[in-house]
Image (tube, rainbow, N blue to C red; front, side, top):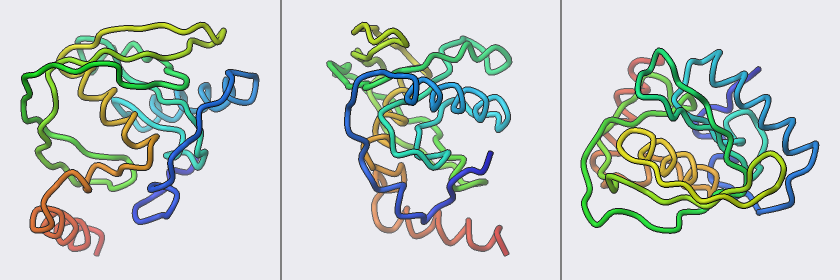
Amino acid sequence: MAIVLYPDARLTQAATARPVDDALRAIGADLIAAAKAAPAYGLAGVHIGQVAPVVVIATGSSPATPDYLLLYNPEVVAVAPDSASGPEGSVSLPGVQVEIERPVWAEIAFDDAAGTRQTRRFEGLPARIALHEIEQMNGVFFLSKLSRLKRDMALKKWKKRAG
C-alpha cells in the first residue's frame, strides 16, 4: 500500500465526518494494515490516499505491542492544561523528527466500528498520537506547528537526506 508523501496537497485537506459504513470500515482495515507494515504509531486516512474521517492510533504501553485502535469521526473534547514536548514525525516525511509541544492528556470522542459514539481519555504517548493524527485528519500537517525557521530547517534536513 503506497503512503502519500509530503508535499502532496491531500495532506492539507480536511476530512468531513460521515456515518460509519462498510466503505469507512474498509479504510480503517487498510489503515491498520499500513500501520503494521510501516510500522507506525498512528495513521490518518490521508496517509493511504483517503481523505476520510478515520485514524488509527497505538494505545499500548510499548512500541512492541501497539494495540491499534480505530477512531471514526474523532474529535478532541478536552485537553490537559499541562503540556510536554516530545518527538513527532510522519510516514509522509520519512526520516524527519521534530519536537512538538502537546497536552499531556486528551479526551477524544469517536465512533466505533458499529457507529456508536464513545469518549475515551488518553494519556502520555497515546494522547500525543491521537492529537497528531486527528490534526492530520483535519488537514493540519505536523510541520505547520513549528516556527518558520524550525520548519525550514527540518525540510532542509529532509531534502538533504532524500538526495
